[in-house]
Length: 114
Image (tube, rainbow, N blue to C red; front, side, top):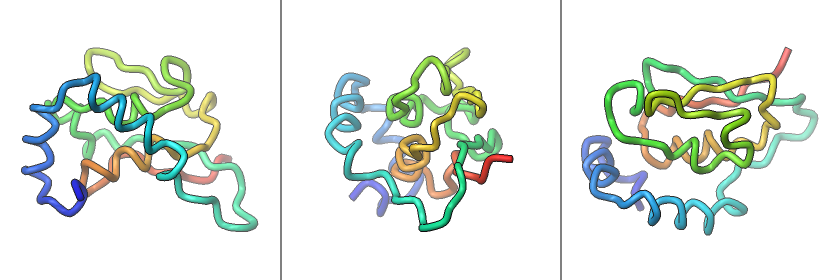
């Protein structure tokens, strides 16, 4: 599985992966990869840790963006870097799951909204 590879191997894999293939794979797995919210959990919103983001670190990664059902609303790409609008996030956690598949230190985390 991709997540079992060292982070450098995943980065090299992503560099060679055509964008259309990545989008197709993400579409196939969307319903199966999202973590379930624990009982009693409040509304969660995505938060992006720029220091841990592969795209913000200069890599060509759009996994969170491609996974987001509110793409171009809650999650936009500006200069090939993801930018979150937390107030528009629906808390589905698809972006977090996608980030975890390619990053040992996931840059997207779901946090309780205030």
